[in-house]
Length: 555
Image (cartoon, helix red, strand yellow):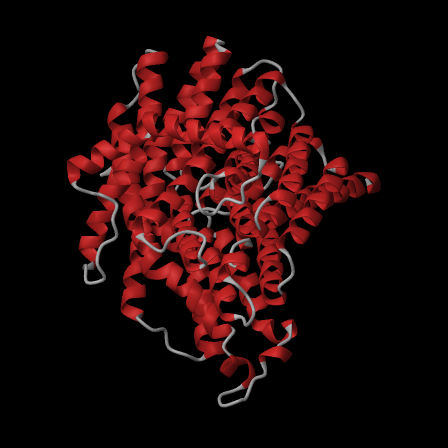
């Protein structure tokens, strides 16, 4: 009975979280566009799938992933074996990222866009290989990032020096990366830290900082997500420079050849270690991963997705249970709850991913198409000269981007989880709603500016590099206690709810605005959604500190 009530509560919270998004879309559709939604029944079914999937997923996290993550963090800290801890950190980062629903969705979209743009062959095998290569590249980078972050907590290194060094690395890589990969690389930094990764990584960081003498959970416990958001940008651009596929802009000479050889060796090793876990399940069930025909029904697609998803989650289970039983040699507390949690996670992922394809992705693209339609901008029957289209004519696009950015971020379960944890660790000095609103405003401004970037056709890296400069300057004057949390806030914003709509909006704008390319301009909105919350949270802390000091001086 208790479990059923908890599930109903999760369902209610899921509906509440998605309600702002529904309100925003309904308002624009009814009041602004004044157009009916095509395929309404299909979108309605997809929305129900998203709600159910999100509820099951979040409940699964509470039952399984959260508790086992915290338990293992304390266990490793008590053993004092740094090598084992770092190995676990890598395996956890890699395993959770491979299974990220947001990364899976974006990698598939990136493969479709790459095929349409002529980067790879327009066939299932080539697109699947591109998406898989992108996922494993990102997963490798996150594994290494979590290792670095854990080492920072253990050694007590200041986070800002490492992050600023990483920003410099991103800027340097941007100068050499192919234009086609830059937007995808920047977005990859946002989609890695989603619903699966955030809970486990946050639990690991705060658990370690709480267990190690001399560490402050607020100052040292946060920051792992920031590393997991930063390194994928560098690695994906490296994938574009040194990759072995058709998308590679390969560097000549012995250095380029050496790096390509290392990439091939690493990919082969990862394939030997991790791929069989998922492939064994797919062979057993017949879930090959090949796309279903268009005629396939909703339930058939759901079952297909469910079987495929198991293969993606198997690495996570292998990492957690393997380390718990074989390395720590301890039983898993409340094993039945943990197993039930994994079942909920699997079911939730299946419903959620199918819901994305049925509802959120089509809605994002539809809104972009309708808001950029010349008939909407100039009126029906108007003769439009594309050469004279100006960015100022797309005002409603920027308003919609701001509104949907704010609504999706407020709805993000990952942000809520981090805000609650920050409130607990800070003793209430950081308000849950204060942090959520600050982050949501940052995302709203970022996506609105990103939409302007697509419409105006200005280079993406100009904005990102300028943003990094601003963050660095802010960091120099920010309260020490907020720095790690601010960096983490940039990662948790782009999760299960935000990514699908934002990615679809970006691709939709790039496909409909005259003169823009989905391949070159369609990606990058997620990068804006990850960068600007860092600025807004630091600003929130600085303003709060200023008000507090002013109040104290008056007393």
